[in-house]
Image 1 (spheres, rainbow over the protein chains, first blue to last red):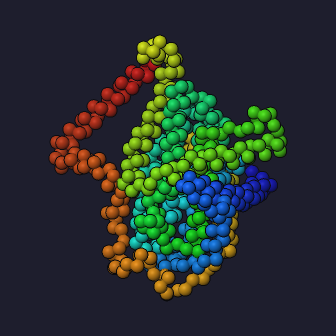
Image 2 (image 1 turned 120 degrees about the vertical axis):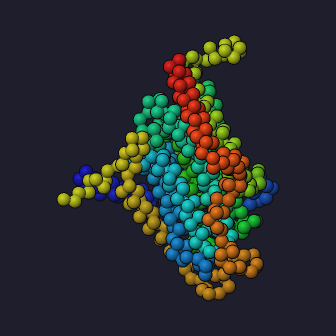
Image 3 (image 1 turned 30 degrees about the vertical axis):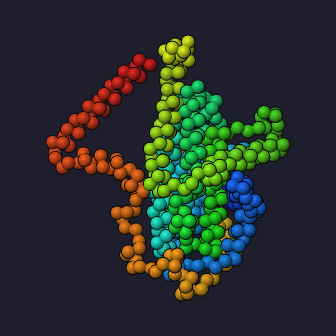
Length: 351
Length: 125
């Protein structure tokens, strides 16, 4: 690699990261506004205007940035930044707006899973460093929640990668490979059911990743006064607020990349700029739909679970459900592929 | 001689890959963006006043040792919801060596059954 190539790559990283940071923050806040407006309407309220999250950030910037006496100041001030930075870096490896990831060959799905842990971990460290009993309880709960949802999430990722490897796809953990081979195109009837189950589990994992009702016991405003965010205020709280927005976009983009990587432009035979415009609009619509089903609808329809109920939900019913999905996909590949549908129907006495 | 080449390589694990240098540069840039954004916020607060006390809904603050979560309770929620699993596991740990040897034999037998049946099943397919 010569100097020219290095400087070109460096420039791409710098400009790309700035652009993705602005993209993530802007759309994160827009979708936050839409989510709040929709959930208000679902509860028979008018709700705040869609631009309210932007006003909230501006308001937080004008508020005092209080550091509690019991806190460890440098950790307390640093972790909100760490959370936001790690979340922005996830966007580098995700296909956004119908385009390939910015660095398709430089980071894979496993890296994204690790990076997704950092914002939650930052909140845990921030909570413990606050020196507040509420925050400590919140941090402890966040840690248990993290351990809980990682298990079914890992099963989903491994299942998709395994199915792609059977298909002969190289680099099964590369988001570009996954997006190029949509799972629905390679699944038989049983596999289709299996992937629907996995999608359902992933949709239920999303609110926990984003600390939303019913899995928001680490924050639980009405019980522990905001939990791990109790002592945060002003610009530090604004950083966590932005992290939440960017993480929502990242999670929705991950679900889209894994399950709905389709673009509209090939359908209409579009090329160049019209194709870009159609694909970006379609991607934004998909993000909206994913947030609607995995965040808004869930959070307005159910009440908050207790922390032991959260752990039970993820480790027992959802893990079993994702294992059922895995078995369906395995059988689809072995029994169905080798014997076909007809003998299976005959065996079951349907034909 | 020191060369940049190895640092710029993408690490391959056989199935996964990542390039640390790209990530580090991106992290530094994102950090600068976040710091600039944070810079728009107000820095000041009233030190050593009531506002820097831990918020406890108006309740008095006890000794720190009494108010913090102990290491043994760090995974509460986890231990609580999976208590039935831990109880079953505790019962197995009788402290009797012959019981442990019996468990070892049972586990090996199950593994053999799984492996042999699995192999026959794959052979049949």
